[in-house]
Image 1 (cartoon, rainbow, N blue to C red):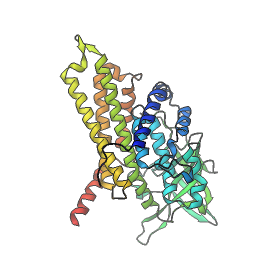
Image 2 (cartoon, helix red, strand yellow):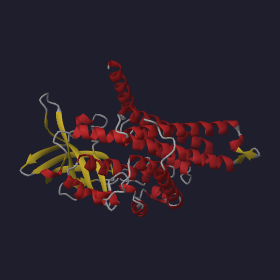
Image 3 (cartoon, rainbow, N blue to C red):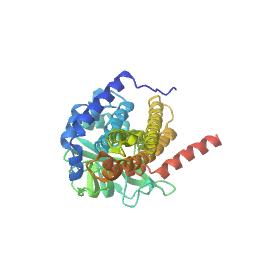
Image 4 (tube, helix red, strand yellow):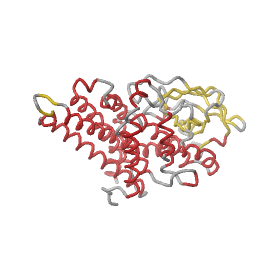
Length: 388
């Protein structure tokens, strides 16, 4: 398998289209949504009209017939300007719709995917719990059979896209039984919005991603039909591991976009800002910072594209996805810090995009697998290969 250093023509055209949208439609207004902690419905509708929510799905389900690389290209370009919109798209596609596409029955796909692919509706994935983050095997939410229904009880936390006006469903992980060794048997079940007993809390007050929707969910004797089970009973753990492996490539693309956005803003500022009679970019201390920032963003891009190429080729990609996610998230934090330093006092003002990027970057080292989890995964893959 050869890593493609140039995007295929159709992907490059998509990149330019999303870049234009981000620069012309998003950049002028997103700061206002961000400061008001408001979900940008008009921008989401524009993204839906562009077909972004259906990028990696077949046309028969209302998708655009593209692939996962197309989704990641779009995410990187959006995140160069704003991460709230980028994470809205990423969570809607890779966490909201992808589990249904990967593991759903034909009837489930035809029932739920068209609205999710069109962007008319958003889906969410309820995995994390208040006392269960990285240790997903510690899930406490339960789903018990009662006639032809599941009865769900429990709480989920930090769930993106779960409480917007256009959220249609949340796919939740729940314990549906016990294995012979006493360990939990986890399944995934689709819960439509508005189901009695399903309560969506007020939005969190967050450090960053302030124009995205993130909430806590509670389930009190929530009844959904047995046919809302996604895939085979007891296969939920394996399902979400696959979904997270793919999602790490998408998050890496998003993190790369943020890192590149920090370069873009810093180069612009360093050329305009003058000190001691010349642009600050002519000072070696600033110029070297810019060079290092660009090097990090470039390397991160190669990492996520390598993982994406392996995914599309049907090859193992778990280690490469973890490497991409680990590296890109950490360099996004570094680039955001350096961009703020280059901007000086202005970098601490919310009117400057780098302040938003600085606030948005830290969560990238936490969400969809912390940096510690990525290192654990990489080490396991290495040790497994060594034993072989």
